[in-house]
Picture (cartoon, rainbow, N blue to C red):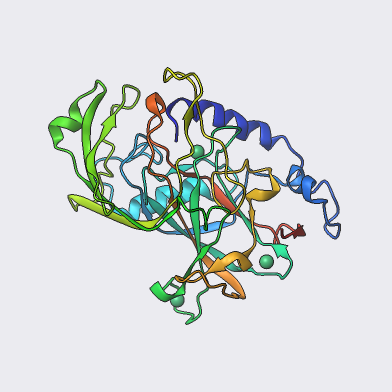
Length: 321
Ligand SMILES: [Ca+2]
Ligand SMILES: [Ca+2]
Ligand SMILES: [Ca+2]
């Protein structure tokens, strides 16, 4: 999340809560552009958080709040509380690769010709921090997403020449001394990627807590996935006015929640080779930050998730593209 945007996005959430739910009858198909004006964005169908593992970032240990002694299990529960039910808050996934794995009481069905779900984020105009969406159908019915059950939702930048598939980032835990420093400085979280680059991520002046997830005992964290092209531009040329425009479709925290292209068709799922797969539905959704980008004083670009809406359960017929 960009650093100053939190209050604004909470405000946006409050404004959206005023929108009437079910303003059209359940059997009517809303026109594409209406999708979403008639959905309430203040509830979520998420009922489980199986894993919450953010990469280091300026909102880590804050969204949700880490308290001394919290275990992974407790942090999963805190994340669930933030993104389930009808009083939504949000979790921040931090830098590249940081992720959350969510589950549901019932399978989100894949209906042909229609989009099936929305991952809610806090994007607004020129504040898009896209995360890649992975989906799993519990084919072997063991109640867990197995490694071979995951597929990637192929978003609009999948074939962009600047997208790096098989990107890998390792972050190293900073010393307690660095964590304790309250002023901003550049050489904070050491990282190394698989593109031959290493260096440090900065600490900024706005967020003084540790940026490394403190409930994780390992002293380094490695994340793998696809990295989308950078989207941040400083329009002032002086570092003052950063904009992060959206990509077209197929991501989390990218299009505004109320935009039709925030909605996902499970038919967009592809396997590791980019081959389309047909899933009857999905039981688990994983979202990870797909950007590795610092936008000046706004800090690192990190995906936020505030819930998932099953469009069929909500009785919305949203055409695919
Ligand atoms: Ca965001
Ligand atoms: Ca579908
Ligand atoms: Ca399974």
